[in-house]
Image (cartoon, rainbow, N blue to C red; front, side, top):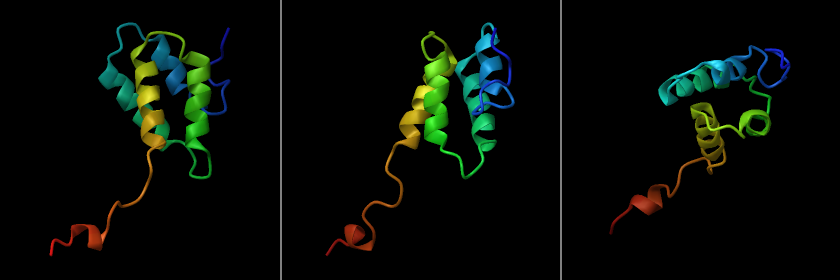
Amino acid sequence: MIDKGDMACDPRGLIFEAYRIDGITIEDCRAIFFDWALGVPPQDDTVAHVKDLLDRYGTSEHPMTQVLEEGLQALNRPKGRKGGRRARVTD
């Protein structure tokens, strides 16, 4: 049996509990994911944590699996501004 807080990347068991809720909606899962993400310490590797969560739970068809996959895609996007001043100049 899985204990609620047995994953270092989910110490409060938010993701664990989300998978246990019958009839949970994708909107609920997004709110839970947002709360979970806010609790990740800045020095931690959030991408690695999401991958760990997907390894544990991602085999089921569940709205949280979709949210975790979306979160992983968003975290892997390039960061920073694209273009800059020169890209906006239209001479």
